[in-house]
Length: 215
Image (cartoon, rainbow, N blue to C red; front, side):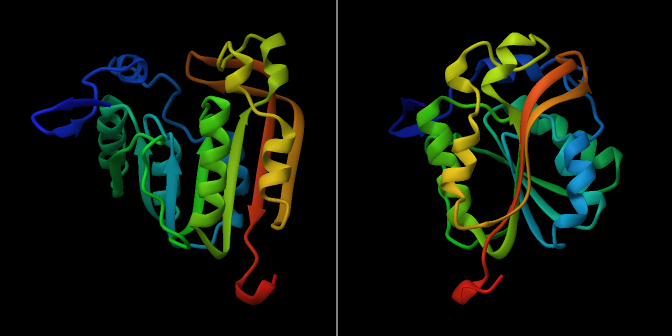
């Protein structure tokens, strides 16, 4: 963030904004395979997609009948999300959000998704904790990200281990949730030009206990 004219403003350009500024959809326009496989786990309702980039997963979920909001720090990614939604004849709400300064409300979302949203450790754990609080009782969190083992594969994702996930990131934060799916291992992803080949991921699908602890 920078200061100007007495108010906070987003920096006009950041690496993700540069990456998404090209006409081509960097990660393609098709939804992530894990999201496609697990979409039936999500109750139709209000869905938040964080670090959603160019919108491929948000648009897919909107096609399934969800009311979807995306958060991303790249204006160019949000613009491509709007264009993709228009081409698919669905509506997706886009919001320019810096996760370091995001405003989270308790029990706001029926579901939250995060696909390959990679952040430094402090922000990663802060975001997962915020997700936990922001999902409504009975709601779900779906996530697929690269694990710390991905450095050996070199088929996509950050090159810094600090930006990669460990199983305990999920298993500790969501220890009191119903874990419906958890996977730590190899798979293959072919998503645009930057995710291409065999890789090592963590997949998580958890459901927040209902009020009073009912499952």
